[in-house]
Image (cartoon, rainbow, N blue to C red; front, side, top):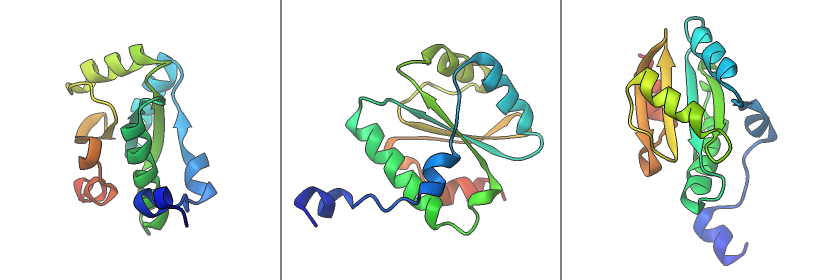
Length: 131
């Protein structure tokens, strides 16, 4: 294992988690996700694809999700901020949150239940917010 792998961890995130993100690419998909939050909680992850910190946080979140027995309790949505910033702005307005990157936002029944950014993003806290 190389030095950087020791520091940041080797990529042992399961393929299942990497492919379970539903990408948001337009306002209609975002609105549809919000409406689905009445059926099942949803977690939005807002990510800047050129930011090293955002990449590290995403990797850690995926690792937490892959090791969780409760990963199926939420649907996962991914937003690439560099390509779809207007969706992030709409999300901030709709849910009354300040835009951050990276940022995780849990929505249940159309309402904000959890909002965290940077190293405060923690899947266990997401699950706690569901209780």
